[in-house]
Length: 72
Image 1 (cartoon, rainbow, N blue to C red):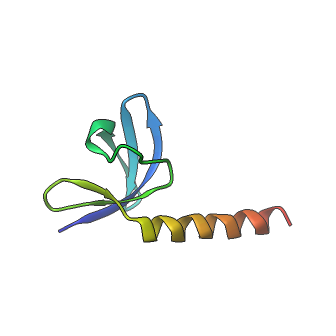
Image 2: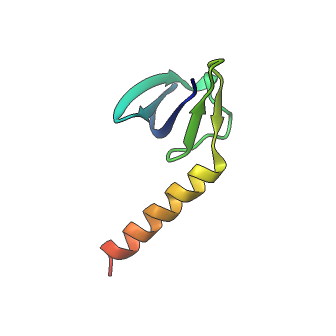
């Protein structure tokens, strides 16, 4: 069963991914080369990481709305 998470931050060569409210440390070398903080990630059953572009766009839009509300 695939898992989904979000890139929380990078610490050197480690990516901290939030999955179901908990964080997991993953070697950056296992991730797609152009992954960024805030990207939604799919971890396949095969253990391969993919960026979910649609979910990432949705998350960024939600953050933009929250930021707009915060600074009104």
